[in-house]
Length: 109
Ligand SMILES: [Fe+2]
Image 1 (cartoon, helix red, strand yellow):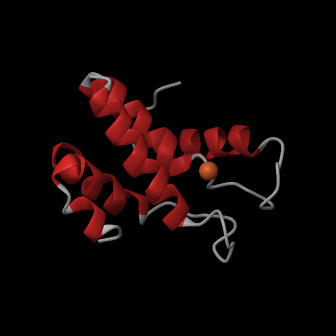
Image 2: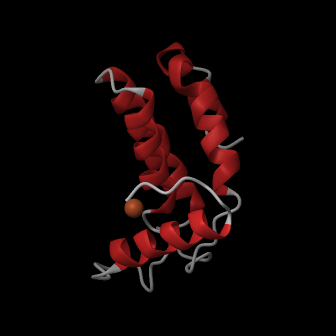
């Protein structure tokens, strides 16, 4: 489990279980820059953790939290470089679409 030390802090307890579930799910996602210094799964895990924490603090619904989770784990999956890489969000969205359809998962446009 990544970020275990952070998750032991009481402030993170409400999102600990969903974070761990999303982190497991993220293992199945293929990243195009697996050796990147900046945009690997560890980066996406940090984004996921903070997104879930902010979403929880804002009182988002389960449905909204699910959207946040998907966005966090897929958002940098289709980067071609570590710069601005215009279009990487759109490519990630296409991958999310394909991933959901191939895995018979519900797709949220
Ligand atoms: Fe990112």
